[in-house]
Image 1 (cartoon, rainbow, N blue to C red):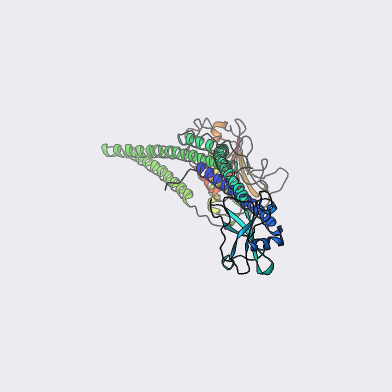
Image 2 (tube, helix red, strand yellow):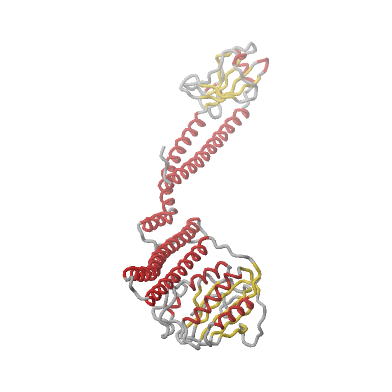
Length: 496
């Protein structure tokens, strides 16, 4: 059997419940009314007293006085039958003559009646019933007092007819009204169905409007809207990821093609010109080795990024950011060509202090070296570089949280988190907002170099690697910059 729709099941359930309630009320009313009528009839029977002289008249056979046998001689429709002392039914009876009479046995012993207890017996004709009660008379005689049940049967028949009509009307009204009420109640679900159909057709920006938390459909609507938001966000992330993957493959192919083409060209040149001078061959070999090294570094960076994306494993050792910064500044100062590189506290007026975190010293040193190399490479010669270290709480003014003009490579940290911060700031030309938004993307390089004298940039993977390492340590790499105001790269890590 096919399952019924929710609307039909609700209407059917309401109809069944309403029908059962009305039917139960009618049955109870019918039973109470019939019981009340029967009690009134029984009260009349038990309250009737047969005249003592009537027993003697019934035995003598001379008949009853006219005051007992004429119509209206007894109250209501009473009928009295007599039995003599031997238990035989006497022919004389008391009461108005009627077409039918109670069906009584000719022998008192076969009556099956208990004195004083009313009992129902059938009529001799017509299919009616009589209510009778047995009375003990003088000299061993007995009398059966009877009343017809036509009034009770007629009243109960009319009640049954009225109850049947009322039940039919109730069922019809409940079905019609129930369908309207259920349809009105399920209207939010119908709207949800239509909205879901439109979303299925491709309109993913639609949302459910019934979101009242006081109703079940409203709570369902809120849950579905949340689910739709997450699904749409997942689809956008998937599309973005696929676009980044395609761009990454294209950029990687482009970056590898250049050194491979150079190596291939000089190798073919060396093979075709065997009589080439020793100096020419040395130059060709130098260029082949240089491009091979460049390609090797690029492949190493790609492999490192793949490892960091998959399941990065970092050592969990105590790391002092101040010592890390001091070593990196010392190493960078040797190859800076006289460029000023200073180590300062994070907040002016404070003193340098130990800032401890937990992580991989080698990977964190790689982040600092990448940032210092980026500052030296993309700023004019002689531009000062400042390295600052300090311990603060995460916030818009200190680091680790978003604010206008700040670009982060990963989600912000909770406000108030105890963090260690290392800033690498330069006084170079800075970046415009469009370039700053994409500076942490893989293979992204600014169209024009930040330094006009700089003619060749890197592969565009250094900042992406640094950002991945920072995120893997539970921290964040962020950038504050503006055209003409230099760049401040900030490494934010949770304190141990």
